[in-house]
Image 1 (cartoon, rainbow, N blue to C red):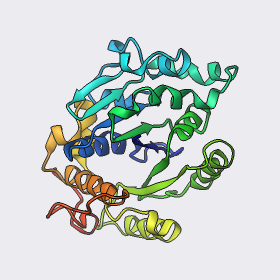
Image 2 (image 1 turned 90 degrees about the horizontal axis):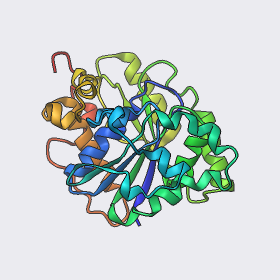
Image 3 (image 1 turned 180 degrees about the vertical axis):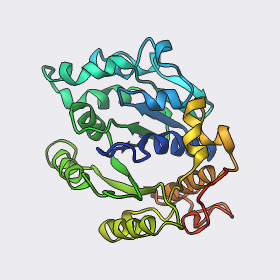
Length: 276
């Protein structure tokens, strides 16, 4: 069975979907078979991978509410990356789930039907802590939390940890924090460095060494429906996500620990993009 990782942070604008798209794309470049589940009604992961919402006739909504077969819903992005798309229908799922039996396990049952096809499954959760996100946490083995290197970086994290602990205690005892990804980092901004230090003190070894830089290219890519590797494979954002993917893999049990030369210690390099 693959490892299932929920990517979540209840605070918006932290690079959650950017991380979901580009970490999955980077892992696919490493030869891993990846499924990205877009669990956000805004469907930003779907759009960011070049799939228009109006063309999606069946989505993760159908998998959760109608228990439709996920093999009839997923979209192949490339040889190693598949997408379980979202659309506006998911916006009503929060209310519809309330009256359903075993409502917290609907997504888990849906993705288990095709789990054997993948090395890793990532779930891009919405920036809320409702039933949709609970479904993501119940389906997951671990949680990856992007935190931006700006004011109020730790805002809401205590509440998110409380939710993770409740899910772990009552529904999913194996759920743990996979890691913390620092986003929007710049070594030239004192606040960015201070926030990174604060987050590392708070989460210790759970924080990845690789930090994701502020990047114009990263910000542009979704508007073209492209990953950063399709948009600008040589940008600092692309290098950072390649490094993050390799660091992620190096922390998995029984994995060969290898980091491609030139990608290590991205966080300590000059990685603030001005023109790139």
